[in-house]
Length: 227
Image (cartoon, rainbow, N blue to C red; front, side, top):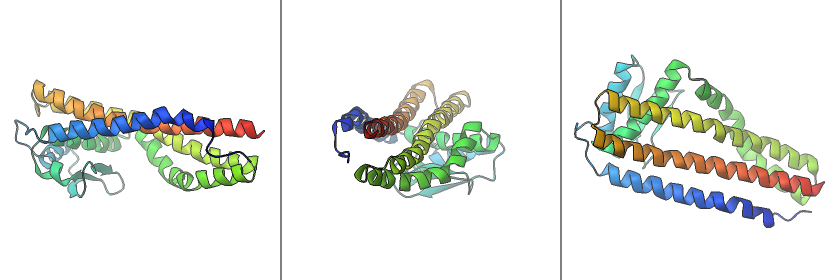
């Protein structure tokens, strides 16, 4: 039997530190720029609806949702959900987040390949995230390479999902900043703040992918030791 808490756990410590740093960075950037009103006076709701209308996407709804940084786009319901502060209040952060989520809606509307791929992975990944580590634990405790391999395969789907998420999120932020700048939603100085909010958010996805990759490396090392 191979101990679970062994030297390989050291591999994921840098990624955990990166995750903590990324979370603090996005919270700090969001807190700062959510308190700075946009010169246009537009709320996140208004920005989202205007961009959607400009792209002929009046069928996509914009609704408030509870929580902080709970903003998301639901491709099944075709809904852009904005946290209540971003929905109701005019702020640089709110405009940036709203444009980013609409960026996902535009990706969906245009059939962005990586978004399609990520959506296709969603169900398998949900199953994989539930079953991967139970199978890994059973494989380690029972010294069963077959069970461990099954867990590794399922966890590999989780890693793939994180990797596919990166270009999807980066592209949504790129679209958001381009729209905010070229369509006159924000002047140059406010565009800087919007970019800082979106860049900070991007680091959380990079950190999550890093944690997943290093955990997979750890499992592969444990699998090799078992041989």
